[in-house]
Image (cartoon, rainbow, N blue to C red; front, side, top):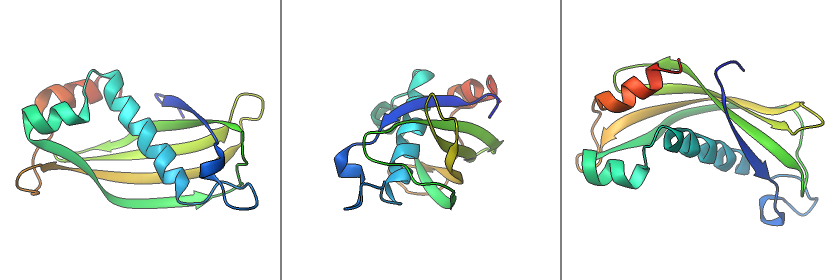
Amino acid sequence: MSNSFTWPVRVYYEDTDTAGVVYYANYLKFMERARTEWLRSFGFEQDELIRDEDMIFVVRSVQLEYLRPAMFNESLTVTARIKHLGKASVVFEQEVFRDPDQPEVLVKGEIKLACLGHSSMRPRQIPQPILEAIQSVV
């Protein structure tokens, strides 16, 4: 993925089922961590956005395709790339793949986030500093 942010993830025992395979829902957690770190890489912390901007990003929709399993103790890489940027939403394309010796895509997905006012839980525009930061990499 070009213009992708990457974040390393190690598969821990708690991430797996009894067969040592990553439990399907945990890929969403890996992707969430990558998006959080992506936002942090621009200098924005989610707790500060709540406090200072009265805003949060929430997941509106998720579409995932599971291609191959990851196993206990594997080193993975999670990517996050902007597919679409709206005034009050962001659509990410994300992938999870083995790292670094086997760059094989395990899971790919599209995650749509909505920007909401924290106190109102109603849609609102993404604050200008965040929009500008995102636009710098799109």
